[in-house]
Image (cartoon, rainbow, N blue to C red; front, side, top):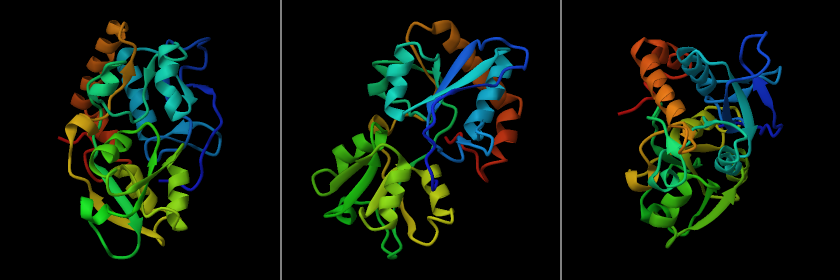
Length: 256
């Protein structure tokens, strides 16, 4: 996914220069997660998810800002009103939906295992038996691991995927388990291409892996939820979604 973490929290206004305050605050994880979001040389957040946020805000005719914090602080941060929308590659799951509301999905990817370049593929229980799997905390992959692999393998958890990738590269873990796009981005990086390889997508389990990626809101923000859903549909329909996606992917990230 990346070779460096960005742990500087802050708020970056993406509204017009004359605006005194933002109307809608979007919360993202405070580490690089390419190609969805990362910081450029000037410290500005950029990436597919940031461009999609800009497009959605334009459709809503709202000014917007970015608030970044740790991954496991996003839902608490939303609930304590530090921002208004989680826009950080968060999967829509039944468990999370008990606590927060979700927009309709705006992208979807399978979950994948990557490992050392030994030529042995596979994601079955037999393939994983006796191995150590690196997983970022508070993710859907953690729940999938508990359900499907915990009886035969060991888990090592990380605050960031970057830390997991570094341990994989030096052999401290046998696999890293996560969403396919950031894992494949890592495998294509200078850091990842010489050490690691794709082991395959895991068998789907919608109950655990969810129904795609959506924006997370407080349950009482019904008006904003409706506006976001309308805006997501509009950028899909008017070609903006496809135009942005072509900058980053050679496939449609919306999925099925």
